[in-house]
Length: 335
Image 1 (cartoon, helix red, strand yellow):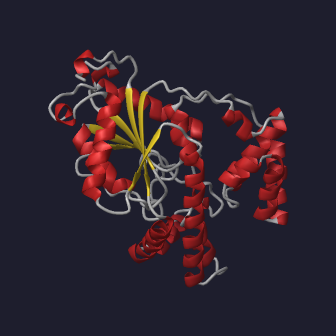
Image 2: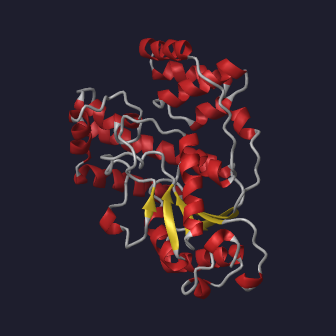
């Protein structure tokens, strides 16, 4: 069907999701070049400057001329929530569309991506600083596992989604229930599941054994690339080990090594284990999302790309050849 006759009324939005180390970055560049797209990072950690190796951030020289957004926009001491991501991402989508390009979210932070794709509303439920401090003191006294167990008792779905060491988000989930009597999972479940966009979501998956092998190799490559020096450099700059950003994968494990809690070998094995568990949680989250066209990327990249291009063309009702020469995304109305 010709795009000129398609009665599009919503802006187009392309999304690529998948677990860590599945190959989203390489695939996203090929897709972006073919579809005249600009990439928006859907990763909650790549917003932080100076946190490059541990977040597997694509280097500027590797971006092949494709604009990338929501990368290196904050210092590691600054907070960044799903509501912040949604606000910035929504504005970017409008701007990219206005310039005749295709907005393309690439990332693995499920809630962040889903909040934009379906226009979640985040009510301001307020805060209770005294309660937060009480929960932090509880964690300091009894450990991260005990705090995680508190959340599991009232909101097992959120506890499953959040890593035990993600104390900030665990405390926020507890605080939401404390203030409203409604769990975070129940609030998310009540969100609308219709999209303000003409939405195309492609998911990359692979055999779990192969994925875990890729994760292990990626961690080894991070260490070889200087992850320990990167973490030490952040600490030397005055970033607290307790900062929100430093609770991310690859940082808390190396901090434990630098503090003498683990040998480097043990810290690396812990990071591999935690990353495998994170990938498992990502896949669990994605299974609850709808509208995903899944592609097995275990082998044959060229064939996978052909399938992905066909999915996008079918969803948007256009031919790939047409997009190479026209800025038909202009205004999001098919003209």
